[in-house]
Length: 333
Ligand SMILES: [Zn+2]
Ligand SMILES: [Zn+2]
Ligand SMILES: [Zn+2]
Ligand SMILES: [Zn+2]
Image (cartoon, rainbow, N blue to C red; front, side, top):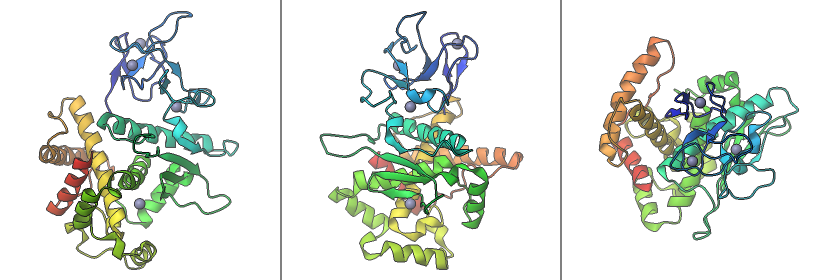
């Protein structure tokens, strides 16, 4: 993630609610996509502090009392009961806050969701309602399996996350059980959004669908339930890494796409951050250059992580086949 600057010159971070130096309120402006502090004194209307924007803003109602969200609401924010920002409106089920620990889980989930949606906004990917194409906005449900089992997954535009995933101990247990090199909340959002965008951008587009079939395989010849059972009983083939970005990708072409999509967003976000801090140059228009830069940054970041005993930042190996699949996603976005 980039860092931002307050009008007073101090640094602001993506999740800053106020500037620690001058105490101005800060937040994410949906109009200019900058994290800014408000430009107002006394009773004046709060305005985005970006001098090229100055859009009148109020805080999302999830900013208080729990500091869940620092995104601003503007006149162009779709109306919602209670003054929620456009990102918070997409969450239709939140955890039961009367249960101890759930507030913290909800905060972690929204924090991860905000980061991922913000990147989609910067890239320009459509996840809101579109009356022209009748495409529907993505929705999020954060559910607990206290009373009934909850599977994290995507179904018809709705992304369900089991709030257990926001508990780092449970998440690490699952990571080791499933032999995954990483398991994070941002990773879950990116993966499930991959399913959402497959529905929205690939499923009904003849040419893209054909291209998808030739790269990822014919999903119509595989029963999803059977493929799932088969994967959990027999695991992936020994040589999976030649063609797939992760072991789980081998389960079904839909999962392969979701894993590739998540990897593409990882790559985009890491490179955006690296560029902001002057480590790399160049934009996201040339895919080959992006992949080369990501490999270079990845090698360095992995060694930094290993220096202090953390898991690899970029565990994936980008074979030619994996690169072809990533290029397909690059063309979609
Ligand atoms: Zn300041
Ligand atoms: Zn602004
Ligand atoms: Zn909000
Ligand atoms: Zn999936």
